Length: 153
Image (cartoon, rainbow, N blue to C red):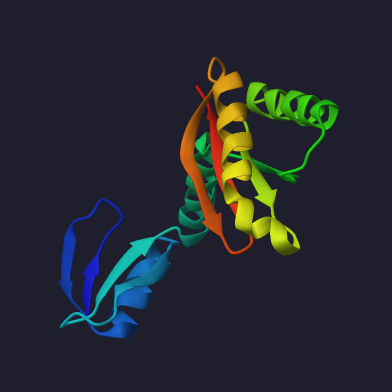
């Protein structure tokens, strides 16, 4: 097997027992880096320190990651005006907090024949919220509901 020391210098091809004794002399570990290479490549390193640094890098990457929340609101085509305004205020709060809003108009029974009413409700909502939100996905049918996604500007 090909052995590489801590600094990345090639020590040459050695037998496994020679490589292990060489690593033990330096009080380090022998780690197989590329087992499928010909000859297999092993590196002398402090494996505990390596794992610790790897976990630190993973934690930092996770900290920098921004997750976007999607809040869903369901309404009906025959929604009353007060309920509409109440729902609109909820969507405004979601968007101000940085979340996306998925608005779905659910059609029950024979309401499915009047999808134009649902589309009007969603377009009205989009036009009233156009100062703080933009339409990420225009209203489209998904089964028995029409869905629109709003995201913060």
